[in-house]
Each structure stands twice: as structure tokens, then as C-alpha cells.
Amino acid sequence: MRPRHLALAVGLAAVWGFNFVVMQVGLRHFPPLLYAGLRFTLAAFPALLFVGRPGVPWRWVAAVASTIGVGQFGLLLIGMRAGMPAGLTSLVLQVQALFTVLFAVTLLGERLTARRVTGLGVAFGGLILVALDFGLSGPVGAFALCVAAAAAWGLGNVFQRRAAPPDSLRFMVWVSAFSAPPLLLLSLLVEGAPTLSSPVEGWVSLAYVAFVSTLGGFGLWGWLLRRYDASTVAPYTLLVPVFGMSSAALMTGEPISWVKLGAAALIVAGVLYAGSRPRALQPVLER
Image (cartoon, rainbow, N blue to C red):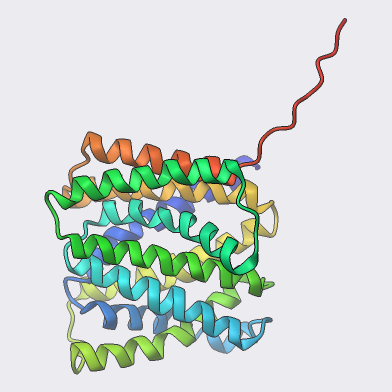
């Protein structure tokens, strides 16, 4: 990658990592389902008026919206509201790679290689380490909700892979439009009538997650994917928990223990190994 494009990829990871701290701030002022519904409403409108049709069958837009929009973010925000710290959440969500592979093998018939089994086994070991550490000091239900959110993300990744949208930003705008109504309806049924008299801090948080993280982030992500192979760009998402944990430590005082660092190393290394390809053996030329 060119240096400036490399800087953009790292910057995008920083934006997505800091996003968890911003969401934690927003959850102080909005209930989780309402917050998610408002996020996707802002991401969809007025952008929906300018992007055109998604370029894929509507059933795939609905499938990704139900899994990633409603499932992932609904469960994620409820888990964070229940006590899951922002930095740790950014790390636990990386096990979506494990669920993506499992769903791809089950639903798409992809081959499960020994390399993938090894890498995902290492990543799962990191998740177990986090679970044991957090279970001693935090609410287990909140942790389980974040793992379920990672599973929903993994299933959504498989649906998005089948859809193969030609433009990721346009697709995300339509996914946002399909995600907002059910989230707002669920919020009305579960959380009651909304109260939108939030302080400026809450609305700034919503603006960040809707415009910077969702529209700006996925727009830049699609721009990079149009210029480089996915195998070149995708590993930079492994920097998200690095920025997520460090920004949470700086902004909210969330502690970073040696156990968390060890778990982060296992999860990142395992996911990276599972997603990489073995180098072909080069013949040794004798002089």
C-alpha cells in the first residue's frame, strides 16, 4: 500500500476503535435500542436520496440489516449498557472472525483448513481467557450479549459475502434504512416512549457513530477495497481493539491488565493466522 493509503487504513482503525468509547458516552443519555435506531436513521437520511439503489437483491439488504444492523448493534449496545466496558467490547467483537468462518463452512460450503482450525482455536483460547477474567469481576450476561453480537456480525458477513455489493457505502446506507424501523419499533415496545431531550453530548455521540464511523468509515473502507485486495486491507481491522482499548484507558480510565493484553495477543494472532495464506516454498538455487 502507498504510505498515505496505509495511513488512511490505520486512521480508519482508530476511528472504529474510538467508536466504542463514543457509544459508551451515548448510552448515558439514550436507551440502547433507541440509540441504535437513531444511529441508523441518521446514517440513512438524507444519504438515501443521493446514493441510488443498492445494486443487489433486496433480500440481501434485509438479511444484512437483520443480522448486523438489528442483531449485532442491538445486542452490542444492550451488553454495553449492562456493564460491558468499551475497550473490552472492542476486543471481544473480534471473535466475529471465528463465527464468520463457522457460518461460511456451514452455509456456503467453504473448506475448513488446518490453518484456519489452528488460528481460530488460538483466538478462541483468547476469548476463554477474557471470559474467565471478566467473569470474576463483571456481569456475565453483558459478556454473553457481546459474544452473541459477534455471532450476529459473523452471520451478517456471510450474507454480505453472498450479496457482493458493488458499492459498500451505498449498500451500508440501505442497510441502515432497513435497520432503523425495527430497532425503533423494538425500542418503543421494550424501552417505552422515547425522550429525545438529550444534552449536546448525546447528540454529538450519535453524529459521530452515524456520520464518521458508519458513513465515513464504510465509504473509506470501500474506497480502499476498490484499490487493493481484501487480503491486503482486512488485516488492518485487527488494529481496532488496539485503539479501542487504549482510547478507553485514556478517556474513561478502563484498566488494561496483563490478562487482557495476553487475550488480545491470542485473539489478534489467531485471527491473523487463520486469515493468512501459507507462503509457497521457494526453490533454493545452488551456485
